[in-house]
Length: 283
Image 1 (tube, rainbow, N blue to C red):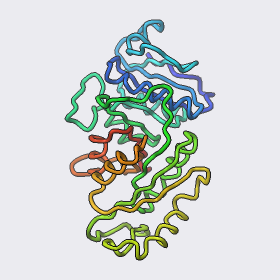
Image 2 (image 1 turned 135 degrees about the vertical axis):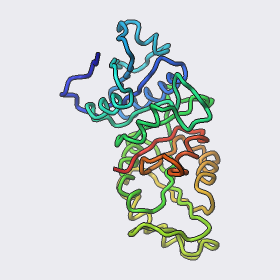
Image 3 (image 1 turned 180 degrees about the horizontal axis):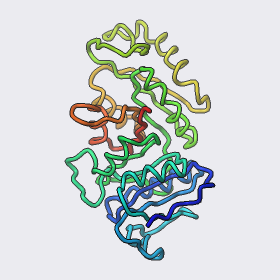
Image 4 (image 1 turned 90 degrees about the vertical axis):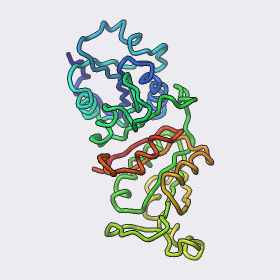
């Protein structure tokens, strides 16, 4: 059974998939907050073998209280990830909010199989929250700062607009963090790499920062942007900076491939971040 909205939906929805576990339901507060901040309708999708009576669905999904007026519930059967992706497309969703794990929770894994499948295929931004983290966002959550690690590459720049737009709608400021490795690595053609003097970045940092901001941070002038330069390991520096600056969100722009040694930065941050992580896959 599939219960989807009419095709004349105007879009901009917030979607949260729930499997009936307490673990998965811990992300619901963040979904409600995003619906409020984005002024968007909230849609809950449950995929199961048998449809549940509408009056019993919220209880089954472990939603003790629903604060968002007009929240819509959908039920479907079939491949869970595909159904989530299909609903996101049908609703022209602004963001999908997911717990990193659900009913089959294994904290040693980056994320459960459904979440992993969705984030690797989804063109819509996906917010992932680790359910064991203390102080999960509630429906009144008001994120003030978003951290974006940015490598200066054209492919990263091509997708950063949507992340800046989200920050604008949420009323959040942005910290752009550029982490340079200790040694030069081959870079993509057209990339905007860091200052030449890695050990003395102040020599040309000012000019580099001005150009970086002109290229990548001018698209949403109402968003206050701070550019920070670090050297070392990207995961370590990102997590340390997020903790020190009390970042409310970390946004990662990535290629959507996690097999083998791919996406080491994304995996490391997802496993350890205290803040929710928004993933935007490069198309």
